[in-house]
Image 1 (cartoon, chains in turn blue, purple):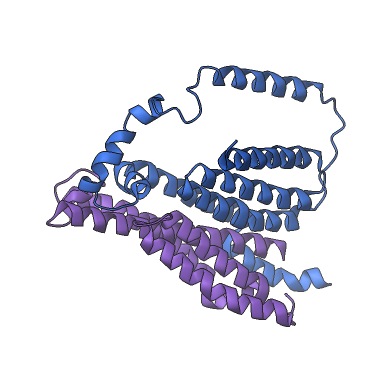
Image 2: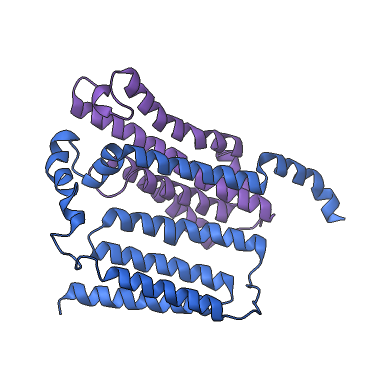
Length: 189
Length: 140
């Protein structure tokens, strides 16, 4: 076994372990920290798959910012998850069936790191061969994201924009803070 | 917000935040050559600001990056991105076709990618800072 396989297996084991512990936790604070660890482990996995751009994003967004934003959300909602009393049989059945279907689906997939897999035969060779002449920048990921797939990236930025609009509408915006400063005297009474 | 900040926390923050912000700019403008780009840079920049806000308090951060200004930057980034597309339309190409932006297609691509990455970075950073402000304001 080469070192890469050992690293992959240990990272995947830790990922699965983190996921199982995450499921069993009722303390949201610990759950958020664990999901940060989960993101960091996946970032490590992406690095070992040579997907540094994705790993970078996962580490910065998943492990870094999301953790802080979720901690902010928990500060508003409370630290403990409310315990559900109804039967867990239906959720277990749904998850098992979905997982079985997904695993069945992977049987048709090309083997891991197969160079003749459809994904490597479609547009990828063209990007690798031509992006140097057509775009002229060394990082192919940036060429694809910013130029070949410029529409998609515009859509993604719009999604981020919409998320901000949603949060601002839900949590009040500047109007709320003005009201709060007015209400502060009432609250203190 | 706490008036008294722990000395260790404050000094560590003073040490880390400038480096984080500088690194964000490096990721932003070096994305063509190494890993990273606007999205990552925006997130890292926002992380630096949020770290500052966690240590020194939101009010002090809002004196540097007021909510009203951050709110404008959310749309400025997106408009910059979409504006590059519209500009390329007016210069005779397709939407977001950077080849027509300069005399040389490669220079056009460079310019286009630089501008749209900047747009992505501005929007993402502003959005993340804004969401943090909103959560923090609501929690108070």
